[in-house]
Image (cartoon, rainbow, N blue to C red):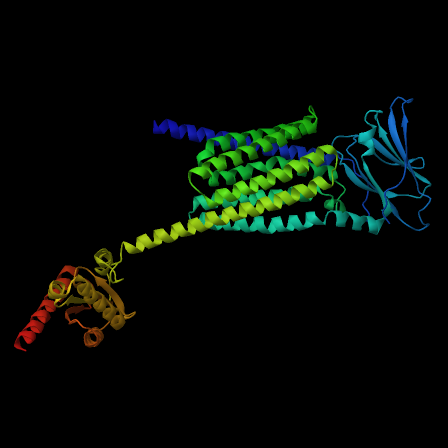
Length: 539
């Protein structure tokens, strides 16, 4: 039932469009809520940097238990502007200089890392509210740095320079892939278009994740909650274009990859809706994403190896190699992440990503090369359909195609008919190789004599045609004379007799009866053949 099948495809397409719009709507809503309600310090400064030796204490006597750490500010110079760098995922904390609270966060949309201007005072205190003795180790894992503006900025730049490099490289490579894919789409090359488009999106999103997961944007914005949300969106979206690329490389597993892609989309929707509602801890959804990604990579490797055993494929092998490196680096990065090393895990993962991207680009180049080869073969086959393979001249099909438009050609036109002499005799006495040599030699003489002035065809075993356009009768006779001269010269150089009979017709009438014209040229050619034979017999 083709109509039913087409109807089902249309319904599925509409459902995918609606799901996409639904996802984009909730992502936009989440970004708006984060930008609207995130609490941020008033300003941002650049920033002698040290890890301060503070005194930790627990206060459980008050209504709100808290863990407190206090640092002395006595070492600060009189005119030196100091800043605090705080990176902590504890959601309820406040910062005091003396008795003055300079910052307090208590919302889930507040960022995990900020810079704070430290006003004059003797001590700096950070209160982690609602902390317990059991959670103290997690609180103490917060990254705290004190120092002056310039040095603190240099520290941030130095620690996150890798993100700048990867971000710029991803922008260049991803942009090149996208531009190349649009060009391929214009060339109607669907397969390579989809491969390059998905690869370009993957590289761009990967670069966005690396940049937003680092602290490099802290130099230009304090909206780190917003940046963090972009980072989470990037990591949840990332597998979707990757699977689109793999579908091109591994078309036999399209259904399996489509199911996995749907699961990633659902995970993205779950995270987005949960961010707005706040029903589940984010770490739970993130663990699901990591597990799903691990299963996906494992399936890609196993199915890729199985497919590659049946028929070797260079591009598939490169994807497999990339997945293996990606898996190793991802496992190390996840171990560092869940162990609490929130700095080094990003380095390890970024290294794995760049190696993986290099393998994917290599696979894409292989796809591109195969497509170029295929296009070249198609062009060769198309050209061969209109070419005489022995002589390289146009064949009878090409001659008939040309004649379709010649009837309406308004200018002067000439048909020169040619026939090789003694072909049968040469074949019978000297062999077909010598007969082929005769045909090829005459074709060369034609091309040399005519050049760019006309078109040459071999329309039969020993029959040739030259078509001239916008040439006078005198010019036509001059070209015939050049053909005869070339044939005569070739005859002197050869150990077989080479000669041709030639007849032609010329007209400048607007309405042309091609059958009559060609027949007239053919008759003239046979008259010339009889004359040549008569001369040969008399000799």
